[in-house]
Image (tube, rainbow over the protein chains, first blue to last red):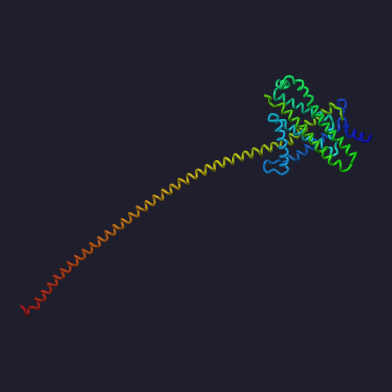
Length: 231
Length: 146
């Protein structure tokens, strides 16, 4: 039992890979390094896929790529509405990043989303983006007024939402990834063969993708709410 | 695990912004631009196709009207030709019958003339014959009768 606890702790702990000796030593965590790897893979992959795209008579690869990208665009287009259209590339990026980050455990890396710093940063960016979209669409006065809508009584709750939303986004993602990791470890401890397989499908792949979906889905909804006219 | 560190959050934010910029530049930008180009191309082709169909319809209409006029014209020409032929036929037939009448009349006149001429000749022959006969009789009679 003690062994398990140690193993779990080791799996949960995000180790410092190296320290940059500036500002009194910046500790670069494993999650940041894995994020670099994910970035490198994604960028290389997209550079390879995007090379010699043709307007006429596209190849099978290009058709698949186009179908995928337009699927994402259409999906977000319906969520964020007409005014939020310019935030679609960001939402797509986050969706792809979280999806890859959640399932990268299958390739032997430690998922970056298991680190609170990463999910916190993601949630922070989301709320900043949502409020930025609101300010940009309604100007500062309109944005401030939108806190007192639909009735003035809810103003404190609306202000609280500024903090609750990113917190819930951050914690939902973090908790799900963490929870599925712990459960998988426990299942592997109890029955090490065959049984973990279906559970792994659920917890490692399905849950990870669902959480990525939920994260960007909520962010898109918040953006839509921030930019849409209330009149 | 459960510690939030400013530097790591910042690192992640920088990473994500960088990833966003890179993916936008290398993935979404090109793909969307290709999709839009294709859309524009298709729209252009549709527009040109409908344009072409329109001109084709116009041409067809033009041809149809010209065919109609040509048909009318040809009918007219045919009618005219028929009429011309008719008048020509009548003229020729009339001329021919006239000529035939004239020829018959000429022939009749010639016959009459010939007849008269023959009669005259015959008369003169008869006269000379009578004279001859009378002479002969007179000569023969030299010895006998007179």
